Length: 389
Ligand code: PHB
Image: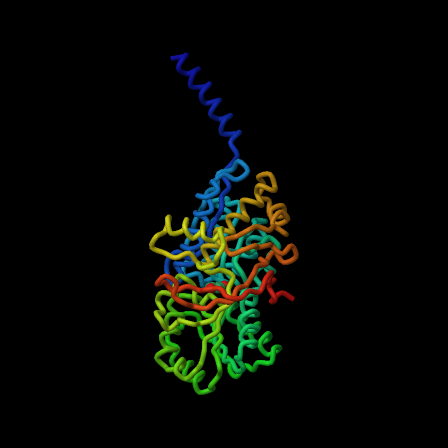
């Protein structure tokens, strides 16, 4: 009996010592919708994160990465996101907050990142102001002004003179409308009408009749991709706008690989500006797309998945650089100025704004091997967010 007790005591002591030596896991709390109308946003971000971990291993500076995913569907209620982030910080003791598919989620959680001193990595939400809401935020996706300025410049250079803008009535829509108008009018174009529609609008016929009556050369639009963009494309065709010679110009949110197949041939020839396309031709992207289809054969790689992949890269690189610490100030200082080769091309974290600097491509929707793709044909290199003061 005594001997057994002694052996047990020794084993326990060793166990405790081993546990004390093993570095604690690196807990990443993911706040994003994985159900509801924007379920694909969270799913795509998660796929990107997991692809990175599969490709590069799940240990960072000796710490095993642990993902703690919390669904804050639909992603448009800041209150829900805030409560969930609070639980992740207090109960789950996460080291990093990440995800954020939609702007209201990121805006609601930003003050918590500041108070709790937790780094926050934004992997989609794209309103310019978000990174200014906490010194501990860094973004690996994009901003609406970053992609709206190039499409405005391209349109003005390519015979588009009169544009009607239609945007979702919240942060990214307001940003897109403002930046498109600014760049387009500076280049000599005219905005002949502007309309903002509620998030969740799925009937555009009345708005599109007004657009048609104004006889613009093109409509510029931003809607969060999903049921809304699918309804827009259907109503655009049914109301005869294409037949009336009105074109569509947009940021690539419209022709996101997640929704582009739902448009059918109505999307053929639509020109967009964006920082990621499945069809981007580089060795890194070919490897990314192959790994994606191997793991998720029923979905298509898109910009949200790549921002998740790059976001995981940034977390790993920052924590390696600090020697294993996720202290918010150290983490952010490590992230500033960081540069790497993403599947989308070379990206850099602007040391001043903590936003991403990247090439924006001009693309045309066309079929490639029987599949609708955004084929890049022009580029604006090293675009910083022009929405920052
Ligand atoms: C956003 O809510 O910030 C948002 C959502 C979808 C996008 C881009 C931005 O495609």
